[in-house]
Length: 268
Length: 253
Image (cartoon, rainbow over all chains, first blue to last red; front, side, top):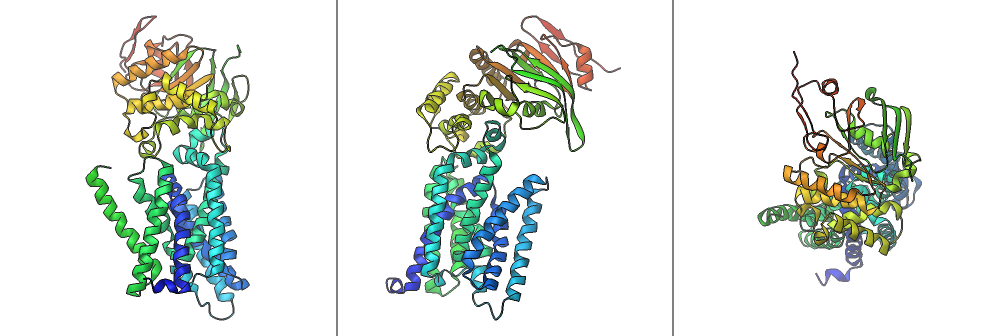
């Protein structure tokens, strides 16, 4: 492993894994307790449209996918609340529509899209120094917003009706939470890819939820668990020469089930 | 100060074309403890949500504490109907009660010492101060209900609205909660809705019956005619307390 760390791509990969763990642990805690896992799934698949648009425009897809995911998150939130259609219906529409737009944009782009596959399934080994700066900036933004709005997020996750009755602007807080989820999705796409995003967003938080007595405790512990998943998956994939994103998820899934059994035995 | 805390005038509400409330008129006077009873689906929760401004009536006017419901929110304490979701939510008793202060202190970095004083005072009033660090999932149903009453009291409200406060609480605990309400009542106006009509009469000042329409009584005595209109099946109501009154089970012929 020591000799692997001499490669810049491996150093970048580990840094990216750690940066992603911060975001997915913290935001994942909200996603799990607020039960918006499938909204996160919808956002991540809709984000594929942003990746396609990035290719078509010929810029780093990460620049385009960020506003694109945010817009998708706002649209899912607003339409599902305002139009009185079921939330899962709206999610389904955006899930597929984003993917379809991505395919069309990539078809319109000249030439072959070389690392398309890496956006679908992630390729942490191709993370560049620019990507790292983008991930760091997104992390800082997420942590700042959480510091400012934690109690409001907690209140709407706990009971939206009560939050509204006590005078909080529930819709605005909910959209802010979806915005944070979108930013986290963008970070995670680089690590594990669109299709596997929800696993990393939910499993670390779900694992610590069995043991944590407060949302804050979950948000402190989940990033550590996420860092273990990503680093362990990365090392395993290096030695076994298999896909890194998928290995990370398999490690996470394994720990999830072991944790379920242990928690059940302990009665937690 | 002598304004009536709740004034509803000919309020109607329809949900997806189905009429839930029809021409409901209700006045709650300062310091009153009113119980609104009625069958499930009779519009009790809807009525509370209209008073809170969470729902807008399709017709009629609503005045709460002399103003519109939304402006009055800071002075209303609300104890919502219980959900299973909250039972395993990772949050302590203390943080739950502080939530009752959030309406007046949203978007600040931390709670003020006023907020902590109010939370502590509210927990003491419901005799749950010793449990402040406990996760709410590790409380009994009755204790958890006390915590939600404390959350409502932490905002130092003038009007307390409660939705089925004794559902899923055993009879001994129910009596405990009503005794608690009597204790904290002093300068508070309380409106509670419940489908459980067995216990309340000895604790409340007035009873209103809601089954789509409002059958309101300026006393605790409920006529059997009203019960027959409200419920379509036999109802047993035991109203003990002062004035004494027992309504017999009625039979359809």
